[in-house]
Length: 138
Image (cartoon, rainbow, N blue to C red; front, side):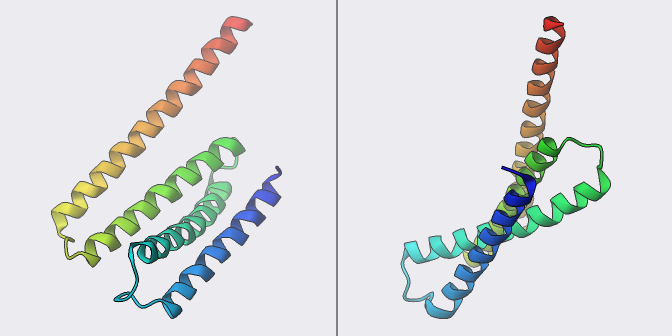
């Protein structure tokens, strides 16, 4: 799949997610809906926010880090979009349940930061393992 078709499908999916989120806002009453309604509401919001963040972050990284490999840039952009979307939705869920306190938000940010460092370290270990295998083959 080319980058152009990937980005086109991602833009289409993001627009579809925002459309479904908007329709949920218009046609569903929060006091009458079930857990499925709330799940679909937050899922469409998550997909919409993730898509927007991915497109913006990938565009910025494309402008700033011109020498970075495309696959590495896309993987990092997807990971960052998902983590920031989880942060935003976690903040909204805590707020909706009246649990949003500074220590809860700080703990949530620390957990996401630890997850990011774990992803970075495993990515580095995989890259080092591939390089050591390539060097032994030469």
